Length: 143
Image 1 (cartoon, rainbow, N blue to C red):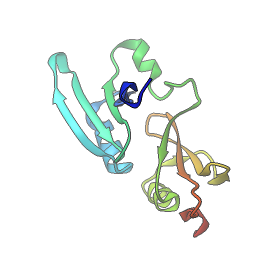
Image 2 (image 1 turned 120 degrees about the horizontal axis):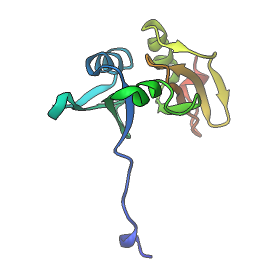
Image 3 (image 1 turned 180 degrees about the horizontal axis):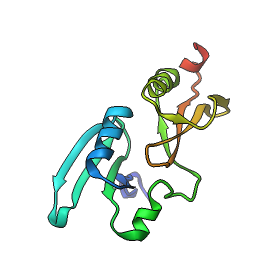
């Protein structure tokens, strides 16, 4: 296989079930600082709502329909960490999120891969906030 034969793929979006579109937009944009990329109204009250943390895959905010989907809100990964939010400055984002009422599940800790702390979003999904270590050092060393 040559370099031109290698497929170029990426994950464009990950669906997060939510109970209400506007409430979810307000949380992800207002609290977590994401950008609203698209909000297109579709048929039957559905919307195509994409929010972005700034790079990488977007979140597709999908309003839960029916009991089964509603029951999965906040527990799409069975209680494990579901999403990983990487940052270039752990302490900046950690402090900002704390001020905005984000619920961290633990104190920040340094692991081999970098600085990390688990938080829950408004719906109960667990996230890792991570600043990856680099050979040049990280902001966590400056804190």
